[in-house]
Length: 495
Ligand SMILES: *Cc1c(COP(=O)(O)O)cnc(C)c1O
Image 1 (cartoon, rainbow, N blue to C red):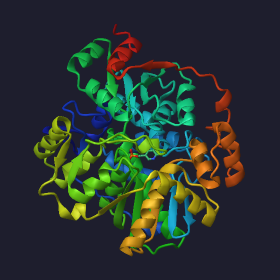
Image 2: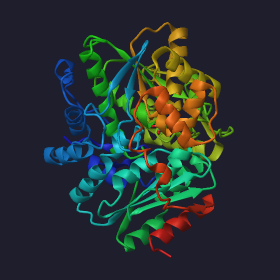
Image 3: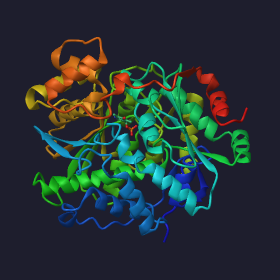
Image 4: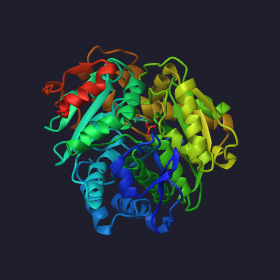
C-alpha cells in the first residue's frame, strides 16, 4: 500500500510521496501531510550499531514508499558522504545534564544541510519517476540558513534553477557572505528590504499564482520548494531523531525502551515536527520541548491555544528563528484536528485575515506531548557563557536558546528524563555573538571574532567559513518586497 500525502486544506488533493516532493507546496495553499503513520520496525538493539545511512534508508523507505530501493540508495549515498566532516554525520555530545545532537557537520554548518544535501536527489528522482522534464525552479525564502544550504545542494544540478530571497538586515554577516559568494550558474540570490515573514508570504503567493504558473509551463518550467514546507525536507529530518536515540542507547546513557526528551530551537516548526513524526513511528519520547527566542508566538500558542501573529517582529541574535508565521505548525494543527482539512483551512484563513486563530476540540494526547518556552536575548547569551564555563564548549545562539529553555524546564518541572538538544548551527556562523557572550567583549569584525572563537573553543575553523573573507561577492541585487515577482520573472526570462 502506498502512503497517502494529503493537502492540509483540501481532502480531495491527495498525492504520493514523489508527487508531493515534486510539487513542494499544494496549489490550494496547504501542505502535503502523511495521512497515516507508516509502520517501521525500530529495533534499537540492532540500530545502535547502524550507520547514519542505514538509519536513513529505514526511515526514508517507510515515508517515501513509492521510491525503489535503488533510488533511495542513490539519493542517500550521494547526500551523506564526505560533504560531512565526520563519518558519524550527526554526533552526540554530553554536556552536563544534556546531550547535544550536533546537526552542523555538513557543508554550510547549519542543520539545514541534513535535509538539503539529499533534497536535490529526491527532487530530480521524483521528476524522473513522474515523467516530468520541465526545468525545476526552486523558489526559497530564507531566514539565513536554508538559502545557503539549498544553493549548496542545487548549484549546477542539471535541469534546476534556484532563486533565494533573504531579509537584507535579518541575517548575520557570515550568513550573508555565505550566500552572496555562492557559485553556480543556476543560483540567484536576492536581498529584500523586508523581514523573513514578508519573503515567505510572497514566495507562497507566487506558488499559488495560477497566471504565473501557466506562463512558466509555457516555458517548460515549474516551481518547487526547498523550504521545510516540502516533505522532501521534513522526512530526512526524522532520521536524526531515530539515530540520536540509537546513539543514546549505544553510549549507555539510556537503556533500550527508556524515554527521552527532545528540545528543539524552533522557527518554522519543521525540525520539531520531524521529532513528532519520529515519536509517531516508535522512538520512545516523553516530551518535545519547543524553544523560541523573543519572537515567542509558539510559546504563547502552546500556553493558550491561540496563535496570534499580531506583534512586533524582533531581530535577534538567533535570526533563523525570527519568524512569526511558523508554516509547519499547519501540519500539527491538521493532526490536532483529526486530519480535518476543512477545519485546518478555516483556521489558516483566520490567520491571514484576522492575524490569529484559536484551537478548539484539539487532540489532547498530541498537545500533552509538547512543552514550550522562550529565552530572552540576555538569557541566551548567559546560557552560552554557562555552557562554556562548565563544559568549555561553545553553543551557537540558536542551540543556546534551546539549551536555556531546557534548563528552565528541567528546574521547574523536575522532569529528569534524559534530554537531547537539537544543536542546529556551528558557533562559527555567529562568531561575534558567541565570542561576546563568552568574553563580554564585543568585537567589531566578524573575521577577528572567528580567530578569537578558534582560540576559545579549540575547534578548527570549518571550511565553510575559511576563505569567506576574500571570496568574490557574486550576488548584489536588493529589491523591495513588492518587486519579488518582477525579479523572478526577469531571471526566468518571462519579461
Ligand atoms: C532553520 C533554523 C532553525 C529553525 O528550524 P525550523 O525547522 O524552522 O523550526 C533553528 N536553528 C537554526 C540554526 C536554523 O538554521
